[in-house]
Image (cartoon, rainbow, N blue to C red; front, side, top):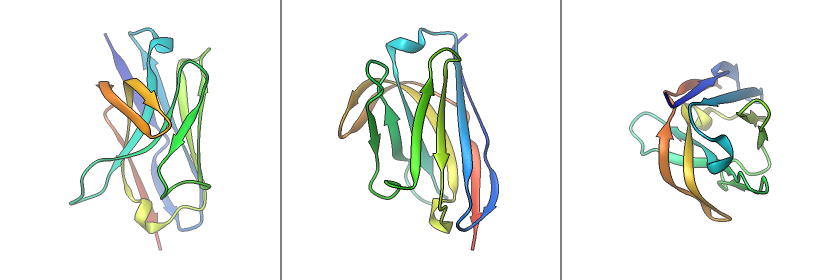
Length: 123
């Protein structure tokens, strides 16, 4: 059974940090890039970051560049999203996804979604 399980969300004050984890199982981890996406209330889901499985190249949305860091522990089939200097506008449900295509402009071709984890940043 394919599974992507996010964890690490929560409530944090502006300027604080959180680290999200995405634990993958049930598929060949190295065959897919992993992306982080988020969806705020009333807004469309947007891509935040993505990491290539082949060479660990990374993509970041402009809104998080310099504040968020994506990394992968292939031995644990887990991808992390370190989020620093959080802002209230970062408040959203964060989803990880296994994706089939990575590029320097982002990832596409969703293979599987996780269930999401809530991140709330208070001002």
